[in-house]
Image (cartoon, rainbow, N blue to C red; front, side):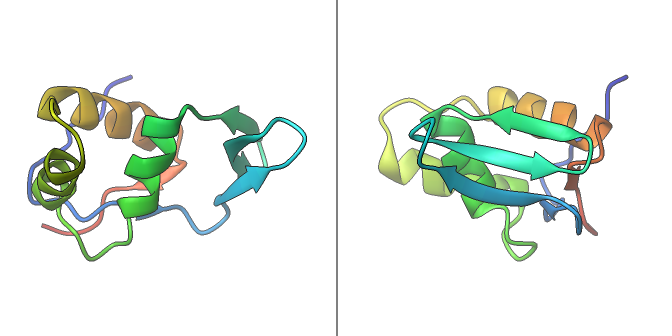
Length: 93
């Protein structure tokens, strides 16, 4: 299932989901009642920017300031997959 992510959405973690550092794995993880998702560095940075205040476009812009090449469609696809699992809520437009 695919969820449409708009540039004006203001994504944030769902209420029951937490982004944490796992010292055993030495990686960020997304913890939810349904399980654990081990994140790569990029995924953790994206989710760290999902504060419910920034828009998707704002997140892409911030990533563009930090890194040479950022593909907005890849960020939207990542958020779409997590929204489909109900780990991320997209927020109002």
